[in-house]
Amino acid sequence: MVRLLFWIALIGAAVWLWRRFKTPQRPTQQPEQDAAPMVRCSQCGVHVPRTSALPYQQGWYCSQAHLPQGAQRSE
Image 1 (cartoon, helix red, strand yellow):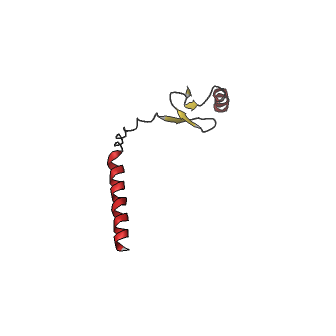
Image 2 (cartoon, helix red, strand yellow):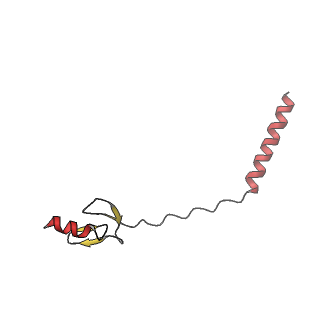
Image 3 (cartoon, rainbow, N blue to C red):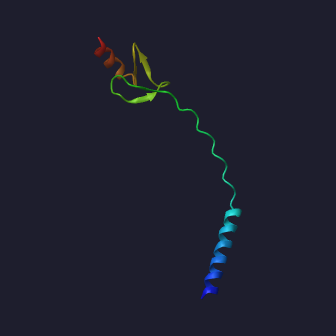
């Protein structure tokens, strides 16, 4: 019985080593690019990238629809 367990363990270790060295090494992950700065919509509070946001007076807005609503509220 001990011989059988020994051979099973030996064959299992051999298969594990063979698979480990046979598979290609994974390429190293490239560092993530810097995230775009986010701003908060002054009307609804949604965070959007600054490149997509619409600036008006002292605030940022997520869409053209919120721009006049924010302008009316600030007056």
